[in-house]
Image (tube, rainbow, N blue to C red; front, side, top):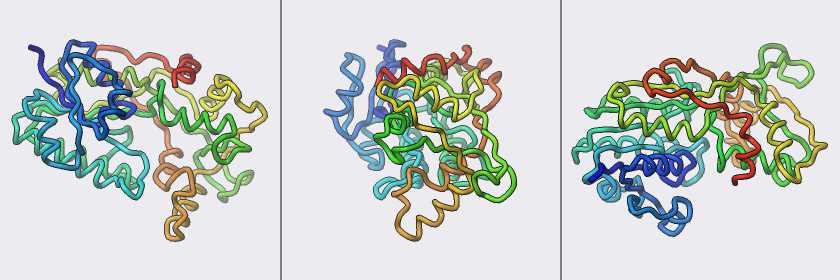
Amino acid sequence: MSQVIAIAGATGFVGRHAVRELLGRGLRVRALVRDLSRASGLLGTHQALSLVEGEAERSADRESLLRGASACINAIGIIRESASQTFRVCHTGITRGLVEGCEALGVGRFVQVSALGVGDEGNCSYRQSKFEAEMIVRRSDLAWTILRPGMILGAGSGFLEMARGWVTGKAFPHVALPYFKRHVSGPPVPGLATLEDPAIAPVSVLDVARAIGECLGRPGTEGEVIDLVGPESTTMPAILKSVKDSTPLAKRWLRLVPLPHSVGVRLAKLARPLGFRHALPFDEGMARIAGEDSVARRDKAESLLGFEASPVLAHLPTFMAGR
């Protein structure tokens, strides 16, 4: 009988690809999901897949997920807070609960999906909570691996779906394609500020899922923090242009409009006390991160995981078609 892999966040973008990857490796997968009907639609049916309905915040539901499993994958994460989901609960609290549950129930292996750029000097709440979660994992008695993917692209990507709305004019701001550039110097005014495009090395969600699977079979990945990025360096305007070119019914006349990332940070700060933070399609942390490079060395990942990340940009048309 194959080992059981427990996965939290199974219906998320990374999680559902990880489920397919693990099933493809002949493993049994137990997924914690909030809604059985929705999860079945997203994950399909498989004799080696079992669904546990519950909330990752509840200890009894975590126990149902973890009991008898040999490993746990934590793929739960949010990029922006809402009234019902906060970074502290989704990142720090749930990770603590899963780790403590694994220790109590004898689940020895743990793979944490974190994010590129996370560290002890996090410049936003998102990264701070991700780092706190990482430290909970690192201080545990488990055989852990932390994966830090950069920008993840693939069919079903939340970013690509959002960009589809922009290029078709169906989503705010409807008349342009705004994006953030790094504010290098000068006043934070378009046309006066010195701006530059941060470098982005997007990674395929299929490679992130493959990395998760490889971790489970490679003892050399235990106790390691591994950055995951793709082999191509690009920029946000190049990605948006490709999305526009690949999307049926895209409005070809829409212009890309660069904005200093510092302006986004200030707008988000002003919107919060005024009660308008959800009126913006970004928060302070997203604006800060958009002003930074999203690249890393690939040699550690290739050495420990045994494969090279695949190119992503040429597959954007396929991703856009596979919604």
